[in-house]
Amino acid sequence: MSKKEQLFDTVLRLTATQGLWDTPMSQIAKFANMAVGTIYNHFATKEQLLSELYIHTQVQIAHALTPLNEAASYQAQFEQLFDNGYSFLVSNPFIYKYSMQVGHAPLLTKPDKQKAKSFFKPFELFFENGINQGAIQPGNAALLAQFSYTQILALAQTQIEGTLYVTDIMKKQIVDRSWNAIKATS
Image (cartoon, rainbow, N blue to C red; front, side):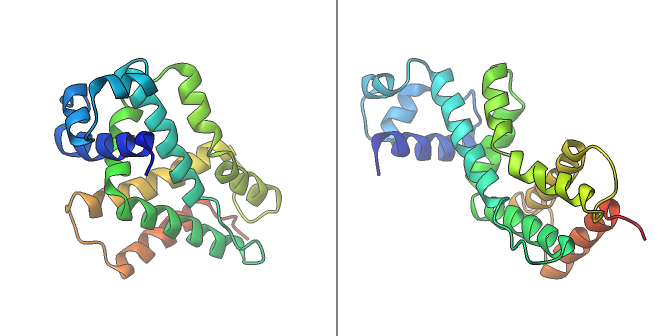
């Protein structure tokens, strides 16, 4: 594991348990087994470290949302996207928690937000292509993608925070309801 990966892993773990702003650089250095100066050799500021880690997490999440079996029906592809996104987030709760904290913090610059959003373009294109092929209701593809992603996040949050143990049957119900909300009607 590189020093940068080690730092990212440490920040994910610490911020998930303590919160973003209650995790000082000295503690990050201690838990990463490196000197504070070493961190500053990689990142000029704590904000730069947090921003770059956010971009890194968004790449990982977006990657989980992109593998599709294009030969399958749009509904089957949607179910696969939903399941891939949900499974990734539940399997990586520190990434989920970090993304939620940083994504809603005033830390990110507009270029950082745009860069992070760009990684989700294939996810948005799935909806745009579905609209064009008549499988998904006409509408704004970006909004439909955001709606669907929000459903994935909400279900993952329920499982990660232990609000409710999400069974496969419950997940299928949410996937079906989400699909029914966006599918084209005959």
